Image 1 (cartoon, helix red, strand yellow):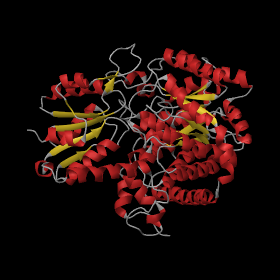
Image 2 (cartoon, one colour):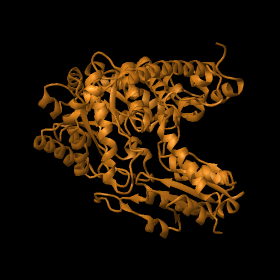
Image 3 (cartoon, one colour):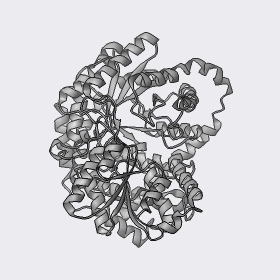
Image 4 (cartoon, one colour):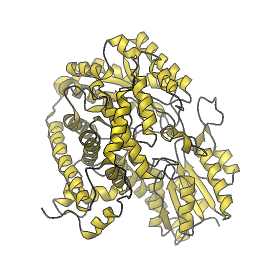
Length: 590
């Protein structure tokens, strides 16, 4: 095969290569020396079971039993501690077994302390001092996993030190290094800190400290093909293991509504990433794409049959998997502890009926798809490495590699290196397993266009100029808005996702646009609104702001749950919208 990239694409990637990259091996060694001297706590989980959590997972693997995990992201460390105790009490009362609890702190936990001033606060609790991590790990015999906003974010060194010392055996969501961390624009510095943190983890290889990846919160959310997400995870593993000598595991779940595809991807990833002494899977997340935001009790109808198949697959294939259940209310509010326990209880009790389904199972189609996924992802991973090298990227330097990968548009990345294009010459990607999140976005776009095409809006929107952006990792809503308005002739500047308030204004000013639409979901709506209004006033320009999504924030420090802040945002002079049609109606009112 000749060159993978034409000159234009080589030049595009070459333009993303940063300057002034430090000696990554020296950086990594600094982390390694730090890690060697850490004192790791013995957590209550180890006292109860007589082994570390990863060894416990391997024992379950031998028996073909699922490990059960919950998601917790309450408003304070004290509430997190109480939730861990409630999970332990639940185990004692029911005879069920929540073994682990995924921790969801505020996103600025992942931002160094000296860069936090003025940043909007999102949902979750704040981790500031080592004692905060330790309070959670010592709370109960349920093992906490510190993942979100740890390794992968710029504050990776501090959070890795604190999570490892406190006794968390998995650390970080490494895949989230592609997310935009507020207040941290220097990507070379950001990735340097992450490589140092990888050195810390590498130093504790014999302690089985594992770097976890999570494709749902990374580029996996943008790909058309599920198999592409495994190729992307292979790149994560290449950086973490091959270059930086640490352990790696893979997590995913929300790409698809097709449980056969999910099972095939899980089994493929397990085969690719498993080691003799650790599972290759961190956790599997359920389908929440299908969840309703009305009549939420009906959402049980998706997760239970999904987990039943996963229970059967684990019993048959023995991968050492853990399942992270998601409460039925997650789409509309921060779940309460009872809601978390209700869902894991329902999922775990599905084990009691799995026996009756075993004789009905034919695993041949899933095994075939698993093998195809392994092969396709391997080819694509090597195409990515070879193509990046062609463009002049030093693929042996993790800092340079991560900076470039973060800068590449994920849709472009998949199109450049997917085998259906590289090998077969197709103009568009032909997916092995179509991904549901992007497909659902495209279906909703088509639906909205169909609903609104015969209204007054196409004529009113023609040549109307507007800037659209998402303030967090959620891209689907903003993508639908952009697509509808472009279809109707508007001149739309698409800022993508994870844009800070100052960046939104800069983008609008660069294009001489005063209408700005922002989508928000992670509880930062009111502080984000206050900040963008303040920054706009300093610029002396008159903007029209339109905010939509989930407009919630904590109004008081001791609030248990966030409040709807629509009224407060409106009082700042910002127009709030609830639907696509509502936005179009208000935008076209001059």
